[in-house]
Image (cartoon, rainbow over all chains, first blue to last red; front, side, top):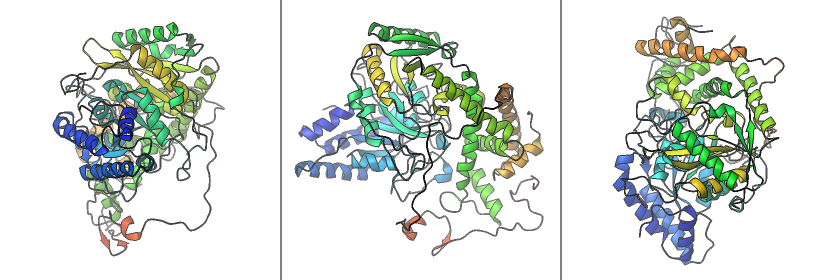
Length: 488
Length: 110
């Protein structure tokens, strides 16, 4: 039985019905990882023993007629910035090599409580800083649709693992597009929840005012199930929102009649022709189903990139101060304490992390704060006001997720070139909005294209509803990456 | 704004507690100059009277009750410490020997 591309819902339903055991699912998935992941490079660590033990527990519960969680037996992969008790967590950095966390992140607790089985930890850009997963200190991850291309980033191990059928679903983190951009590159669904919707407790922090955890899945319905499991209040995260969690599965009504879809002109100025054509088909499909189009302007869009690349590095430079060789991870011994800090960090961090720490330290230093960090936070207010205004006239904003499809390894030769890969996804984080990327076609070369939807804070329901309609109308259907045993 | 001098880059590295090799300092000087020049466009955005964002989504920061709560056992909390003596973390002296730069590089102290 071929199980690798079963949906989250299907897997849980079949296990609950006794059609297959969780142990069989896990064995099949581990066999597939062994067969395929040498080529893809998605996993940094596979917890075979832990996964098998968790599967046996699910099967025991079912045999005893005990109630099963909604994700019982569903095999998942976690981005390696989510801490996992007893399972190495590196953030794809040498500075955390070998560190075994003593606790689970909140989202990991929630998934385990729902019955999900953690297969292992997947690759990403070091400390989630990057757009291609090329900044991992450990290995490249290849795009399952074209092995010469990147899977996007920073959650590139997650997007590649989901696309290649190496897990049923994955959790990533999104600080400036790190769920949505790799989802678009790998032809999967990526959902970045509203800031505060999902607890950040136990997430290795990059930029605390921007980071959110969210799912990468092969369908919108699976994204709804995963979000249901992780959303909600957590008193251990001071920015966790104490707001009711709706039923996300109920959001998938398939009805967009009367929905107002905003098209911001600033997002349609520069993109590949094939992406433009795919977006046109997507918009036309929504109109055919009764949606209305609203032409919009988000006038401060051009300032999002510099604002983001000041705010995020400033927060990163503060957050990453904790990696100093004292309490965990790498230590480079030196005769005095400051020398030990500097040599440990110099040896443990990779080039992009160092670059962002330097930008952040520059922006926050005495005398420069107002000109850089404060200015960027003021611009952030303007960007949020743009969206507040836009949502008076539309229910959802539709844009391309990326200006290009997945690019080749090494194609972005300068830091600025790479930063521009995030140009359509940053504003969502700056404004704290929920966003989703849904596949909406393939290029002539067979590379996936993603459409991005943004909604009002806490309106993930609308994203899922519209995303489900787009998926049904112009999605990839049963098309899978060729050449890795995935062709349907 | 920018370009950065080598001395400025060394000062930032010192503030960031990052030891950078000479080739890294040179590369960083160039790359940061380019990046910050790109960001200089922000200075032209009119922001007079615009409040700096504190939270993207309205929220009140909470305080937890000031009561003793369970925490990680000491042995578990210290399991990842690179160098320890029982329940103590061992670190080198915080005072640099005379004549040594805190980063071990050529940077000057602020």
